[in-house]
Length: 190
Image 1 (cartoon, rainbow, N blue to C red):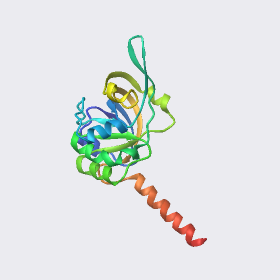
Image 2 (cartoon, rainbow, N blue to C red):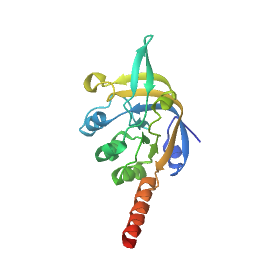
Image 3 (tube, rainbow, N blue to C red):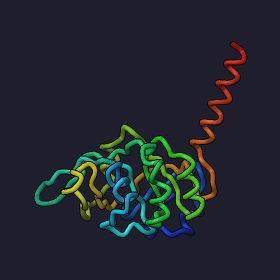
Image 4 (spheres, rainbow, N blue to C red):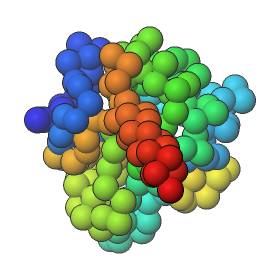
């Protein structure tokens, strides 16, 4: 299913865990340094409202006077769990892209505000880079360096799967509960 900008609350609330989407529009990269900075009260140099933040430290080079993305794979999202819920609320994000899932704080913020967590495939950095059709800007590079900067990417048909929705459903929580139950059965039988 195509998830095209503008990323309105209605569009996001219509998504359910398991939906495969292809994102078209602007996404902003943000990793550890950006999340810490924003959480501690730093001003965002871009308007994140109704936006999607991508946990990604891309490889971007200048070629012929313009930025070209060579690799744009997701980074592990769990590191942002202490901050993500507050950042979703404060900056009115509609989505977060990453890998590995997030926890209960982020899930609560998604339900409260109408946001989703989208899982991108790890190990596909070059393929995902091909979905970036333009680099529209870079912010905070002088402060944090290239991989930790906020890159503004225009993407077309960027593939992701909804693994946490705005209705309180989490594929990550379900898999954890099922795994713990299976492990308990194994231990009882041992």
